[in-house]
Image (cartoon, rainbow, N blue to C red; front, side, top):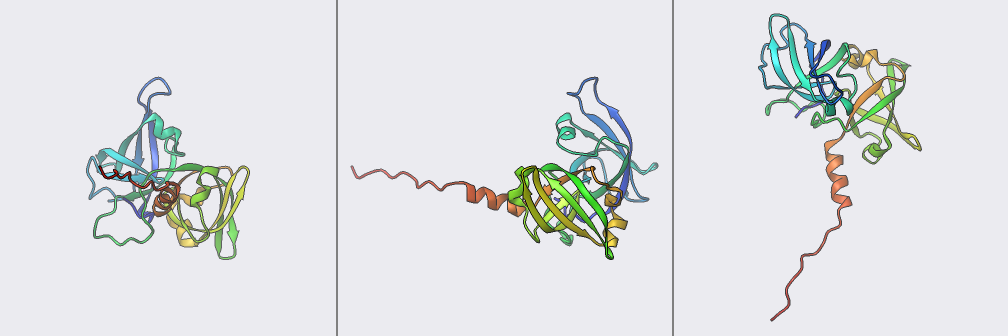
Length: 215
């Protein structure tokens, strides 16, 4: 589990194909801030742009770790197989503060940035989310964008998807990889875990158990 509070900004340094066809995944190496990997070991979970990945190798000397992303993971996420900056978060410990919200590291859909611009002292990030996620998105609800726990300020449903507006304070822009976003950039989205379970409970019709009659 994660919190959506980014603990480091890394950089995808190398991408190697694990096979010759699109059915094969890729091995990805990520450079990290100094000493970021000091308390990690192979097998640990690290969220990369919001996608939970297993560190398969850790090189403390170079400050890099590697993970294998399956073809399925690459199809359902964005930005994991391209050189560039990525948000990093190590798995939450049981005694950690829950500074953001409960995040599973499972990408629910890929949205598209429609606007990212300065508004007053902050930044406005507008994302068009897939229509299938609309029922989980609410005013003042939580969402993760590329692994960052954020609060939705506006929701507008349309035929082409669900448009959401998010306010980013300068600290968030400066301390995550969200600052490189531009209109048209695909982003990983994870909806609120509680909203997922509420929707499931409301969608299932309760069926009374059958009882046998008296013999």
